[in-house]
Length: 329
Image (cartoon, rainbow, N blue to C red; front, side):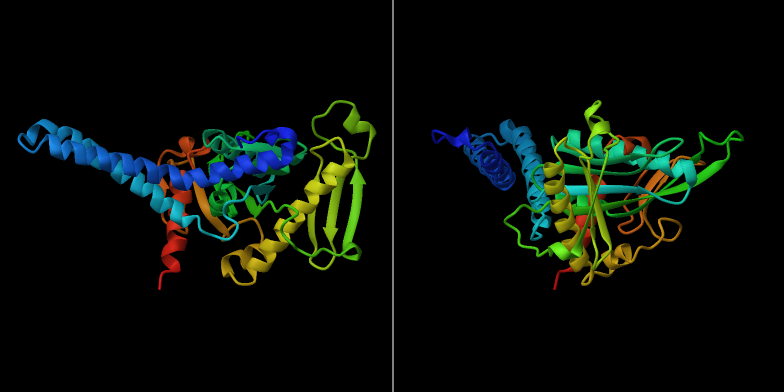
């Protein structure tokens, strides 16, 4: 990065910057641990004659060492082949009518807040509003170190129980939305997609962008005929750029579909199971009590509003720990 002309190729330079951040997430905790251990040795030498004088400082160092070791242990859980990649996240409303569409939009806001807390960047690739309220579906690309490794824990059906704001009688309503997470592959990843297997549709974008999006068919929808997988992108004004993004999204879906053949949990998800009762991975209950519980890991909290504000890390860590324990010999 210090070499002259490094920023002359912005796209390549940005890839190097991301790679550096990813590496530093491993190197940083190790360097901090080394410094703490050295500080501890110095304190032990200073306290040889009067241990009580350094006791409080040593206790503080011990706590910090434990924190950094926990962080390193968590980093070891992100050892999947593509865990370090960006994540393409697609949300889809399910059973529950207008409440489900509203719930889908609440979930989108939840992931945007989680991404902001983690200093990830987010690009909106597709966004389809529902007729009355909320959204039918949306696709975002979350970019940053280990975005896919973390967000893959969120894949599945999410259930919300609350007093419906759309019910004049104030009755309790259960609604569902699904989350699909795939890695964003670049051109270095070889996944064969034959031209004859693709159906390409163009249409006018419906999101932000001023009058331009209403006058040109810049949005792209790709259908992979052999699998039936569909991706759409309307983020850019350029049809060519939207096609490139859509192809990356399709590569990620095809990779995940292949992975699902080996993993029962994902296989169920890709068998087009209904986004309704019996399929949820996590429940968010606002009435008659407040509780958010992951049904795979039993991680739970009564701070549902905190979760909806992006406090997802305990659930993500619980899932990754479960997966790590599952593969132990």
